[in-house]
Image: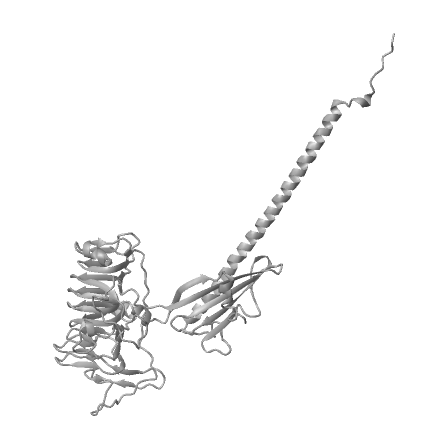
Length: 500
């Protein structure tokens, strides 16, 4: 019988050992995959954090650049007080300023140890359109830098940008409204453009700030342009007659009601009190006993006997302008006249005689400042000469009437009353923030009117002079244009200007 020989144990591994090896390999592979995934995730998280952090500081740099531009705007809105705004006149320049904020030796603190600083360069070469450029730099804790650069152009605000404005506006009759531009090149030395139907534009503007249903009562009138009311409810605040229309020329010629896009329902406006002007130092202010005269005054040979101030204006004061006689006339001839009434109450400007009035000749101008009531109902105000027509009228900017009664005084003694009648036409600017303005007649009214309330009677036509927004400023400025300078070419343009 043959003996049996067992197979060596090493020839056939036990099943359990093989399984343990396979599991170990799978675990190692999974661990490697997990390690790679975690590493990638951590790298992604770190990168995202850096990007978010950088984005945060980029926003901060942009805000800092805008802070610099605000410093320039503040200086302009405070009488050009560049020193108070921590600007310095640029070396070798007469119309450029520069400033570093908070200062050349300090910086604004940001989070995580970052610091920020902004440089601002201001160019006043064109005083009508001041220009400012700001360069903001934020230095991070690791020493890296983030920069943002912006520029802005400023424009002077005007109280006469909206044509006719009041808390309430009322048209009684078939009043029509449109616009034109009397000074298209913004150059007062070139001839003005008179109003004619050929240059008329459908950009007339009428604004009422009161939050009441009848803030703007247009009656049967047509507004070739836009209306603005303070009501927050679409359609609220505007009342039109069955034939009234607001819109462009094509709309008002074929439709009634308000054309879409030609009404705004959240209009606000702030018209501050105005005070008498202060003449330049050394100016003679002449006292008149009667306003029925020709200004500036001349002798029998026609030679001027009055002397203007250093600003070129002739200054006069009178207790009241009383042209109540049938032939009483005040004529402004060959000069720029500023006339102030000194009586604080009563009717301080009166031209009520049958043939009385105020005549502003061509190439002359008149500004009246008065705290009392105004009644001009005779021949009215003829801005452009006694034989003037709409086509020959001086620009409205040449005849300005300012109501100087303060809001505090008006609250106690009542508003000023402005009753003005144009004999054929009235080319003027009326600013009476605490006055009730009534324009009567069937002629044309050219210019701009601001009052607490404004009423137009008859079938008058109101022609808004759009040039007033550019040529009759308030001394206050706003941003006209802003942009970020993001390309290397854009930044290079101002590299030298910001190298301080």
